[in-house]
Length: 77
Image (cartoon, rainbow, N blue to C red; front, top):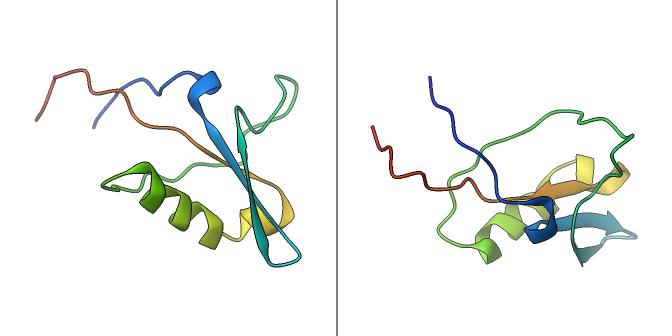
């Protein structure tokens, strides 16, 4: 089991794909009243790689994908 906080929603990048084109927006994907439909943890070397993965996710075509980093707490395994 692992546990760590995510970076603030203000540091998120929201990914949507509309008409086959990726749309990237700084900031959170959802308003507070909206629900999280799930999550994926993907180990990426940088934000650009994470955004490529997010664009490929089916949810980006119908909804949106919020990309946030996991905070390094220095705990290590």
